[in-house]
Length: 172
Ligand SMILES: C[S@@+](CC[C@H](N)C(=O)[O-])C[C@H]1O[C@@H](n2cnc3c(N)ncnc32)[C@H](O)[C@@H]1O
Image (cartoon, rainbow, N blue to C red):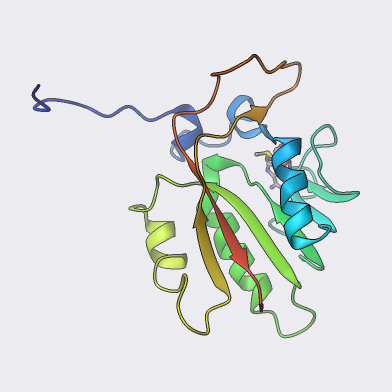
């Protein structure tokens, strides 16, 4: 087999150049997976990237009031639009480093296959999993299914072609 001339195609959820697209950005975190995170981390109090039909917390921000422009307080859950991952990671750092009332915890779910991109190289790689750093990264097993409006999960398949990781800002 030869890879000469092979051109990798990006899944639509992976292309920032195309800009925001609700058909790919508006994918809810699987509830069972989210429940397991709450068992581990305790209850999240603010979902910073949501729509009314997929919000995981009672308090949430939407495209209309813009989670990138609002303060992040409490125990923050973030599964951001994958069309613009870098802006959300940058915002998480700004909030974590805030002088007054930084969040107690931020957990962010991201695609795990963009580690060569500028945002990962600038905001994640230099500081993750270092002694004294609040940021740790966990690469998750398998490929996650995401909820979409009107979608019923079948027995298997229908997963995006990439794995995911958790970015965890915590003082623990
Ligand atoms: C990947 S979905 C996550 C949904 C839900 N929070 C969850 O974890 O299941 C990302 C959501 O962020 C919303 N969104 C897009 N831009 C946003 C913004 N600037 N501020 C807040 N939410 C936004 C999208 O409409 C979409 O519903």
